[in-house]
Image (cartoon, rainbow, N blue to C red; front, side):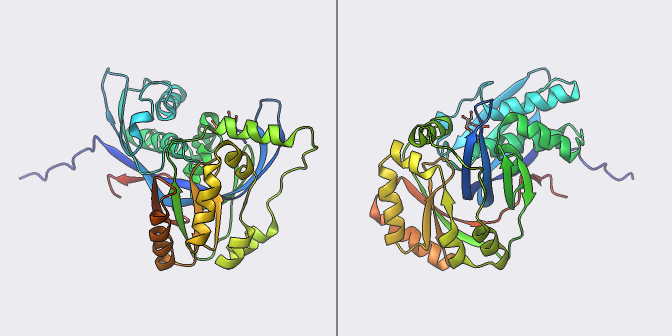
Length: 312
Ligand code: C5P
């Protein structure tokens, strides 16, 4: 009797994390309309799962499920679609692949959900097509897709310079507990950056720099110190575009959070808790305040986009 050959897996599942910016310092505009950034990203345990399988001769097919899926395009404008196309073009092949995205990261929420889908699709197609693209090439392709995509590959906690795509790992002791207040509707990232430019007017903008206090708090695992060091230059323009966010930020502090800030370009607001029990307590209080659509707890740092099935 001959032993059965191991079955070749026709489906790959990748899990990719959302993120919060612990410091988001925005400098001036470059010649391409992008802002020079100095930011600290932390990946958190709200995930999108990206499943890919062969679609011989059928090109790309994209389906999306989960909260907010109805407002996400399922055509070539979707960043995950563009990621599959870009990798195929790089490999000189055709992207015949079915992609399914199960959303766990708030849509248009300032938590890099689209970037997670792009990073997840790159990793998933690379595994499905067994192309073994070198890591540094995946990072380059990721940066072509969007400023936050390289971090979605990287995960953990990282300093981001340039457009936010030049990454260096940051030393972190232990983990941090977060509560996220998800808003009704989204905010467009370009419009938040434009509002910042408008609020700044003709003022000279210094080169952006992450305060040492943020990095020291992270390396010592000091949650209280991190709470007083959190900052986001996009918070003022996000609140200017959506005044209701100030009520959410106030409600989070009243609910007992150590600190709160708008996540990235918003409208999700992030609150820092002492520990898991404290996070659940804040989440319960914040839910009953009735200022947001829904509340989620999460931990950071989480791993970057990685294959979860087939297992290794
Ligand atoms: O690269 P990504 O598609 O994520 O960026 C979305 C938009 O956010 C850009 O078109 C730009 O308007 C703004 N942005 C910026 N500076 C950055 C990153 C993004 O102005 N560093």
